[in-house]
Image (cartoon, rainbow, N blue to C red; front, side):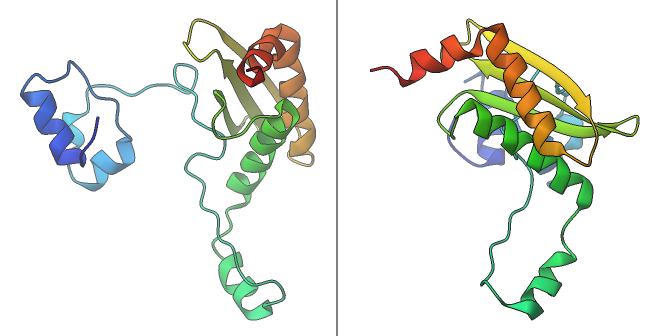
Amino acid sequence: MRGNLDTRLRKLERGECHALVLAAAGVHRLGLRERITGYFSFDQMCPAVGQGALAIEIRQGDAELTCVVATLDDPATHLAVRAERAMLRRLGGGCQVPIAAHANFEDGQLRLRGVVASLDGSRLIRAVAAGSEKDPESLGAAVALDLLKEGASEILKNLTEP
């Protein structure tokens, strides 16, 4: 659906759709929290790899700017994105492939959920694993291998064949 948040909510009110799925952060930011009727869990709707993480690119060798932007680096998010990207890299996916991942810390361990879906949504392959924060790339690779063993390779192969 096209349009800003207000436009989308008006379309809902006029009955042009039965429901909207929106980013809660934007709804909260606009002070419309009371319009939210529910939230998806990460098990119900896993986001795209790196979704919500901020990335900043700077000039190579600029020590002063490196120090300035280093204050923006959240260590937990940094490790989570490293695990998610490792999973994506091992699967060979890009931004046009229906691959999702969400990593977070639970009980002192980095936990990664991964999903590969067919284009029509008829098949969903899910995998979850936890590991040490010391090697997020290995965790990402392990989840990717679990997904491939469960049938993700067939889905991914069908996406790349003409």
